[in-house]
Length: 132
Length: 185
Image (cartoon, rainbow over all chains, first blue to last red; front, side, top):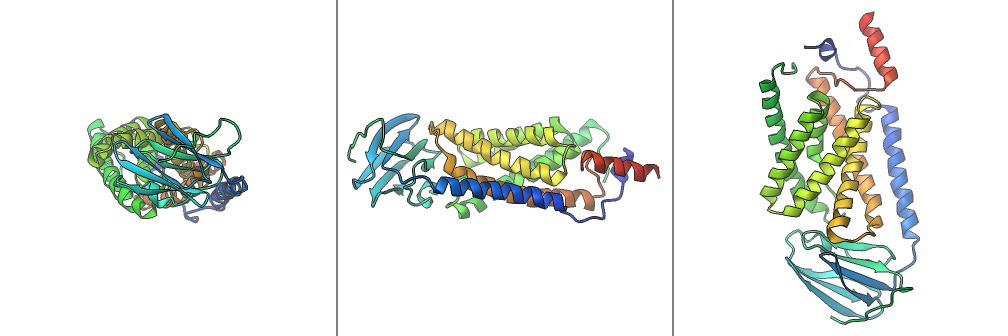
């Protein structure tokens, strides 16, 4: 057994001041990044992907429902300029708990089902405007 | 508590740590479901075991615990994607903690590992769902990784102190010099 293993423990505080500063800096960076993201403009369309393939791009201004059938069934509802998971058979149900999204760049992801919905600005690419 | 001198002793300790990590991982899954509104949020309780093994037994043993824990956790959860997520997060955080070990304090290493764990899982999610834009997930995941990393790092340090163990690489170079001065005195 090496000598350093038998040394008595430090008598100082468990979490040092520099540890608190380090943690505070990380939290501040996260908050700053969050604020920057929140200033993003509201999106105009949503792109839904399943297993790496784009299913369609839908306008947030048109109320509709889009159902995706995979390992689990999932239904997205577009309403009041927002999109959210209305129904899912996924046992975790985390995607449903994420609520409504409407900011450009925001996304709802259902990993077990490999489904995602990403809010985007309407400019460029065009919109499929398909209805569920 | 002494570091097991024989390879068999270390293997036994490694097995106990793996079982503990697996139990904590399953508990983590249950607790995380309460925080469903925070996508990808995990307490990362098993990371405390990884951190302990990394500091006490070394990187090869920590990798072994990580692989076995991830494999068994995915078998118990019944989800193949869970293995990909666990292995991405587990190995990513282990590599960062290994690189930072000895350069900064144990708690800072734990925080860095917690953040890396979450970021690697986010990368896995982007890969699985082919969704490049997941930036909105970053702030809450950095925040949760920092908080859990801080608490688990403190817990790990407390364990080392209560077991009268000193992590081999705890503290900065300056602190280590001070410790060696105290020992020689």
